[in-house]
Length: 426
Image (cartoon, rainbow, N blue to C red; front, side):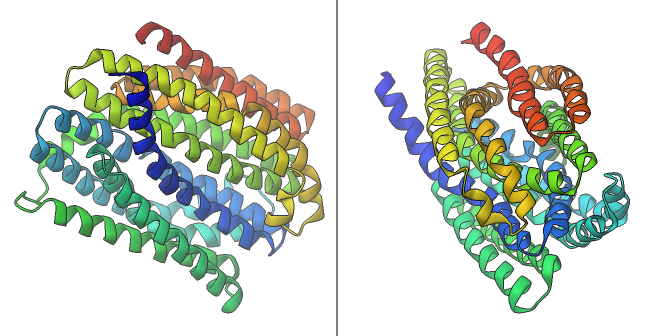
């Protein structure tokens, strides 16, 4: 198969995936923009609550990332009923884990927020947002599992439509609840929860229609296989979230302005990450399908073409962020101190985006190649390399130093470990 054919296949899967993935971080961007005009302490509270919620959901992203290549491999081997059954088992696991997370969140939300040592007004806003938002966790896990199943079936259009409508509903409901009803940060959380459940029910309905003639009952053996296959990916994500939590923790020690500014920067970076993940997810599906069909040559070609796409996309996105850096603060907050601190951080982000493109694409390729063990083990190494850089950033008292440590130190460590594996395997 020629490189041009591979490129067309990458774009066929990545473009709809891109639109769907961009809608997901736009949830956070909308929340940040709407809540940001309620004041710096409220925005800082959203920063703490968001990183806790993203950690809870992010740790279980294997519901999508393990499902996509597993379903794709079965589909590549010609076993579509088996592929659907594997995906349905993932949905049941998502619902069960989501219920556990809901109970844990309601019980431990307040104590978890207190661990960040934030000022009382910030902690109150964070706790309010968190205790409402946990009601949407089961829905978000169902969305992850459903997305993984459909992408494994090479269907990236349905997730695009569902998430697109979900984003529009989230934006509308948040605006009404926050400013129309005057519910403040609580309204933002409630609007997002309603949108999340709407998306989850839509995903389930779409999968039930596709699965006619196949049992929808949970299979203990199948659910166990899904859980076990995602174990290494769970550890991989644990180290990623540990790095993010540590970054937010250091920002909270630097001050309210620094924490609020970091929340805006992380919201923008999350959007960039999801854009680049469109290529990574195309890689998961294509690599998994090729392995199922025992086509090793295609696996190598896909991996190498994706790396080139990732670097080019990183350069393009970096140029966009650099151009917008002077004005993005106006969109997200009315706090003058936060606005003043953002441009230099965003410029640093722009410089590091090509490196991020390399990292995110290779991460997806290795997930598709079922290399979760390597990702998990090197994830711990990456955090160990990042820890002294965080300490230096805290000692400097500078948000710029903190972002440099994250954007070049931590992402650079991931680029090193992933790059080594790429050269060995591909």
